[in-house]
Image (cartoon, rainbow, N blue to C red; front, side, top):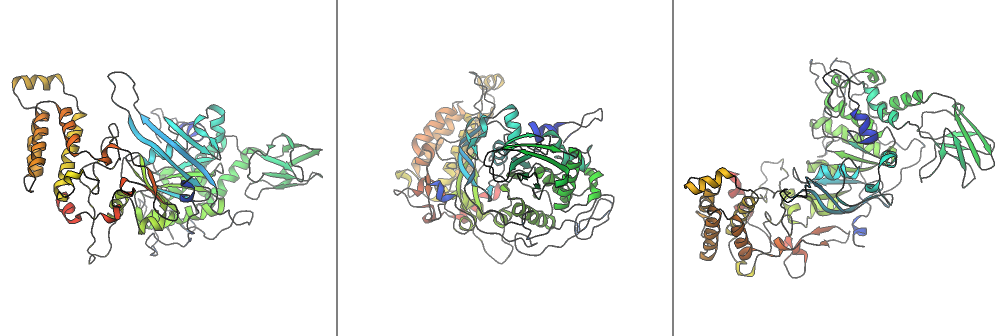
Length: 599
């Protein structure tokens, strides 16, 4: 979080929590079944115990974990307690009905709409899935595929272009103003960079307390014991959700307070008259908030004296704990974790992951866990959604998806996981080229331009895999050329016979096909398309290649196909009955790896 040049701390974080900033305040039914149970042992994703102790900038270390730059140690450092129950002593609810339902969600940028405007950036493009109450849904995919945008859209930090995000049955994309601010208490976010997401000019206590101040917490709810519908006045309101009330009052005026609320029954004055309840707080709300902050700091493994310190005095792991404490301040039900451990070293990662696991059990949280590290996802998530170019390609239970992937992109992604044993000869599916621009995604399957298992036209069904992959790569080059308009200078160069940006198309074709035995018809079409690019007509070249080499993968968007008894689904044309399944099409992975050596 930045600050202004005058030295006054910005209030952007308050806008985040309360308004718009850093901390934000039937076949699919089978797919969204309950996930597996997870343990809470202090181990790394690989299952090995990690060493503790992180060095501070001045060289001091802590006992058991992170330290502040002042060299002060924390009690237990970055360790967490495990196996805790909820504050009331009750077991947390099992994974159940959908809490978040996403339907046809689209998030586009740069929608100019004018005749000279570029196409919009389709960061999230027609995504649908459910997140069950109490589960952790992992979201994986390569950089730029739209994971963070999707997460930010779910908590309304980004505005959805189309579609619905239903939270407990209510479409939150239609909320605005006070309604949106009130809803944000239920959904929060932990950001990827623990340094930039905290305001260095605010103390830790101020940072964690800020959402409480913005939302005038505590927003007490109260009910009369044995009375189904009560009218509540004063410093509390009637219960309007399925959550446990903050205050329960007997008809005799005896008050009981929810266990996790830092408030004593003696600090509340309650008067019952029939079905009417009047509540008056006898203590300042600021004191309740300070007690809440101290409670949260303790729960994330920090000490009470850290309340008055500044973010720069903490290590990366401790900063992330501060961010986690801030996200939990308003007692949310749903938390988006945007790569919360990617900036931390391995030993600290394991401790933060176990902390998140413990907090989920204690506070009955639902997580969307965004990550690049697939071993981390396998360690903490119940189900996993695989994303590519703004689309979810496969979604299913974690262990099943990792052990038996069905989508070609999932197979490619999992094949890239490093093998710690150097003696193991692991085959990899190395993808050639780069993902298409989200301004100009393929008409059909998003992965069709790089997929090694595309359904080929019948005339080229027996062509060598390596030749076909190079055809696809050349089509990608031409595709990019069609997105680039020529400047007046380039037009002038063309008139003068000088070299211009399109003149290298024939060289690209020669480089791609010089060392492979290319059938005559394929080379003829490639050469004709290359010449069209050189002549300044890449659109004709693209049409020529599409007409000759186009297939169902590039022309039709695939539907979701259920691929297992657990309801796991995948989007791929090869799941249709008229094509071989992806698992039956084994690409020449060694050829892919060799061809990729110069990328």
